[in-house]
Length: 145
Length: 189
Image 1 (cartoon, rainbow over the protein chains, first blue to last red):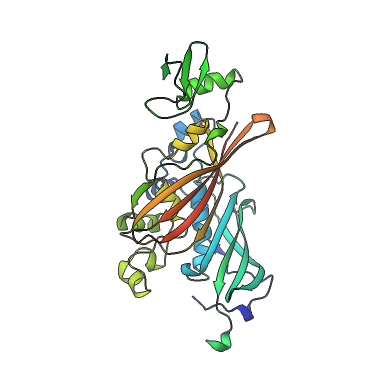
Image 2 (image 1 turned 135 degrees about the vertical axis):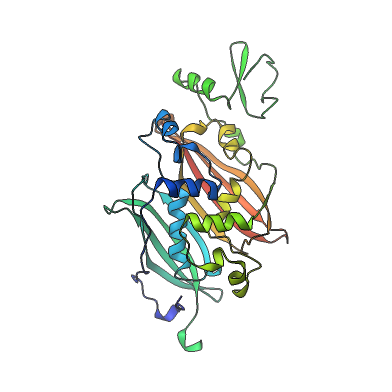
């Protein structure tokens, strides 16, 4: 992980994007157990259809976990101050999620140098699945380091 | 469930809000009853629970489950699955990833209890928004106390969409605030 400094950040800068492997039913089975979200609509096709869905669909929190990896790949987790998303559209089995982030603001507050990021996750067709924002703490200046 | 106690305002076994129909009181947690009543246009949200905090829940942060979570999301950074790597980075143990508060919040007998209590059909709930504020890290072996508060309950489009927002405060065994997170769910039509 490269250190990030306030004086080297410009509005519009893009974070290195993160593309995850295609989501399989196995992914959902693992995430069901790992996340404690045992809602059968994510792992049991029979249940999902009876509940009116076409098939099982992806836990929103899996997409958010991927977006979290975009952030923790850019700054250490202890420097994430806030992180929020809206789940825009359902993600299905077979989809490939790419997470992107862009610097939309930077400011200093009580001696803390903060960068505000706009976040978007899209599928393999470019369809927006998740949008959000995060605020992260960065170093003041590369010269002082 | 159906009870004949017309003085009761809450289900005596599951604490959920009751409402009166004829001689009977119906428990909101009974989804078959709820669905039948909604088909008659009777289903309503219980806004009296706005601002209500629920009893604290104590949850252990399991190292094995953190490793499993890392596997499920194809995590490559070892601080999320290797205790020695996490300690080398200054953490007590394996670091819980940024979204892990929600996983801890689900580690209860019925994660949908609050949604049911306000009158949402748990089989039709979708998660529409989630946000976190961060303070101290959560690590393997920690014991986290979660206190959830329902902060809003509302409808859109004449009741076609029913929303609940809740906020959860997570405190560790040292009394430190770790994260505060906010969840919005909707009952899809």
